[in-house]
Image (cartoon, rainbow, N blue to C red; front, top):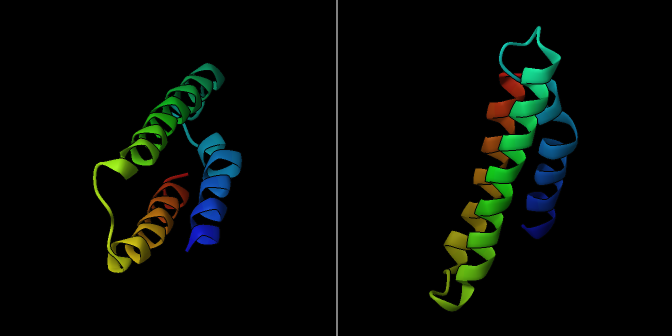
Length: 80
Protein backbone atom coordinates (compact mmCIF):
# COMPACT_ATOMS: atom_id res chain seq x y z
CA UNK A 1 0.00 0.00 0.00
CA UNK A 2 2.83 2.43 0.69
CA UNK A 3 4.18 2.17 -2.87
CA UNK A 4 0.69 2.84 -4.27
CA UNK A 5 0.32 5.99 -2.18
CA UNK A 6 3.71 7.34 -3.21
CA UNK A 7 3.25 6.45 -6.89
CA UNK A 8 -0.16 8.15 -7.01
CA UNK A 9 1.22 11.18 -5.15
CA UNK A 10 4.12 11.48 -7.61
CA UNK A 11 1.79 11.22 -10.61
CA UNK A 12 -0.47 13.88 -9.12
CA UNK A 13 2.27 16.38 -8.40
CA UNK A 14 4.52 15.75 -11.38
CA UNK A 15 1.92 15.37 -14.08
CA UNK A 16 -1.77 15.73 -13.47
CA UNK A 17 -1.84 18.92 -11.38
CA UNK A 18 0.42 20.71 -13.81
CA UNK A 19 -2.03 19.92 -16.62
CA UNK A 20 -5.06 21.58 -15.04
CA UNK A 21 -5.95 25.05 -13.89
CA UNK A 22 -8.73 27.58 -14.28
CA UNK A 23 -9.14 29.11 -16.83
CA UNK A 24 -7.13 26.70 -18.93
CA UNK A 25 -6.12 29.42 -21.42
CA UNK A 26 -4.30 31.47 -18.78
CA UNK A 27 -0.80 30.30 -17.91
CA UNK A 28 -0.74 32.40 -14.74
CA UNK A 29 -4.05 30.93 -13.52
CA UNK A 30 -2.70 27.43 -14.10
CA UNK A 31 0.49 28.26 -12.20
CA UNK A 32 -1.50 29.75 -9.34
CA UNK A 33 -3.76 26.68 -9.19
CA UNK A 34 -0.74 24.37 -9.11
CA UNK A 35 0.86 26.47 -6.37
CA UNK A 36 -2.21 26.45 -4.09
CA UNK A 37 -3.15 22.84 -4.75
CA UNK A 38 0.38 21.76 -3.87
CA UNK A 39 0.35 23.76 -0.61
CA UNK A 40 -3.06 22.33 0.30
CA UNK A 41 -1.90 18.81 -0.43
CA UNK A 42 1.29 19.25 1.59
CA UNK A 43 -0.73 20.59 4.55
CA UNK A 44 -2.87 17.45 4.39
CA UNK A 45 0.23 15.25 4.27
CA UNK A 46 1.68 17.06 7.28
CA UNK A 47 -1.54 16.62 9.29
CA UNK A 48 -1.88 12.96 8.37
CA UNK A 49 1.72 12.15 9.25
CA UNK A 50 1.53 14.14 12.48
CA UNK A 51 -1.61 12.40 13.68
CA UNK A 52 0.03 8.99 14.13
CA UNK A 53 0.37 9.51 17.87
CA UNK A 54 -3.30 10.45 18.28
CA UNK A 55 -4.81 7.22 16.97
CA UNK A 56 -3.73 3.95 15.43
CA UNK A 57 -5.32 2.95 12.16
CA UNK A 58 -6.60 -0.57 11.68
CA UNK A 59 -5.33 -2.74 8.83
CA UNK A 60 -8.58 -2.11 6.96
CA UNK A 61 -8.07 1.65 7.16
CA UNK A 62 -4.42 1.27 6.09
CA UNK A 63 -5.56 -0.51 2.93
CA UNK A 64 -8.28 2.09 2.34
CA UNK A 65 -5.79 4.97 2.15
CA UNK A 66 -4.03 3.85 -1.06
CA UNK A 67 -7.41 3.28 -2.67
CA UNK A 68 -8.49 6.84 -1.78
CA UNK A 69 -5.21 8.21 -3.13
CA UNK A 70 -5.81 6.44 -6.45
CA UNK A 71 -9.38 7.81 -6.52
CA UNK A 72 -7.92 11.27 -5.97
CA UNK A 73 -5.48 10.72 -8.85
CA UNK A 74 -8.27 9.46 -11.12
CA UNK A 75 -10.50 12.45 -10.28
CA UNK A 76 -7.82 14.99 -11.18
CA UNK A 77 -6.70 13.01 -14.21
CA UNK A 78 -10.25 12.98 -15.60
CA UNK A 79 -10.52 16.74 -15.04
CA UNK A 80 -7.18 17.64 -16.62
